[in-house]
Image 1 (cartoon, helix red, strand yellow):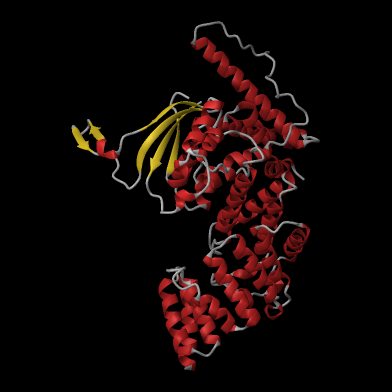
Image 2: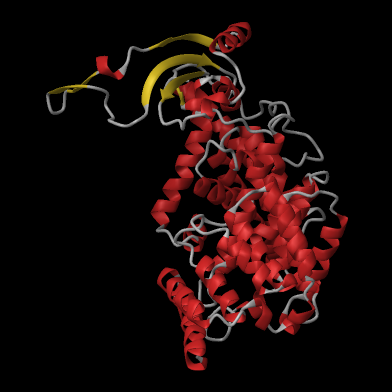
Length: 409
Length: 108
């Protein structure tokens, strides 16, 4: 491996950890990022020439830490000069307490909780997590979320300012706050993943890389919170969805329905890992249940082999835990597959008025009516869905189904 | 660190007030025991509010924002950090039927 490659690898592995530690030591988020950046810049010069250090992470942390100490001493000396008194902080002043620890404790968990604090707006939580923990640049984050770069820069500045001004603590929250705060961290990672997952094939690569970043951060979270079953559940859920990505879009960029996907193109290593995580996770939380559902789909050799009764039961469990008409709709689809379209239709009809404007309700109704041979009603429901469908790809799909039954009728 | 707690009333659906939680007396007891509340008061209704905007030399009757939610009172807190301020605010009885806005002081 060349020195340059080693720096790239160390960047992915160590950036978040170094920034997290420097924030703890300095209390200054900008200084922490700048000094981490400096350390990697130095590594780019030194490693190709001097060879890669035995412990790259320790080398980088020490370099960044020394840089921060240096800048803080200079700052203090300048402040002292401004106050027209003799500098009390000399170049040789000992480092403050906590600076010389070795090994350096892993501060990434407290960084995650602070980035995902509920007092910050959701978009800022995601952006801050990507910047400080994943090391994405402001330019990259702006491109990933399709917002102008100055707006993204402003969002990050405001978030850091609020953390400082409103004194949002830099810590892993105490036990009584932990469940709520953990679910915020998980929610941020899941949103990050879904942004990447919904990106079209032609989308900027950085947008699609959000999936990989979310999975990487979820792995860190699982490592740091080994007793949190929902962290495992979320990681499994993301892996089991990510596995289907290669087969999700056709060459024209249209969504391919799960039942029509070429399962040979799924990522079987990811599926295996996801299934293992589901099996090893004792919890029955929402992410774990959704992962179990995804595992049922991913492990079926063909669409016809799908274990629909289990999926229907899992959706039932999910609906009791997080009552939501969208979950009910998914349950209805699973029930229709397990017990026939008539049983599913009863559940779908029960949702009337609760999902106004959501195109998948009439689309699902249309599909069930079509399978029951009630073509006139199906056509009406397809037309209703067509009016509500948000994307061209979905409109093309619904229009195709509609013309099929009109031809048949 | 000082925080201003704006107690915002209105906007609740009927029945929401029935949730269990602190009474105002219990809230005052706890904040006094912990020494986190410097002062606070209820305000007279928005019918007695007057808004002054010197930019347009405008004095109007009523609150600055005409919404179905209004500021019914305030408290000044002295808390260790945002988490403690949120915890105190969440225990205030109006948090169950209205909202509490927590704002850090400019001068910390």
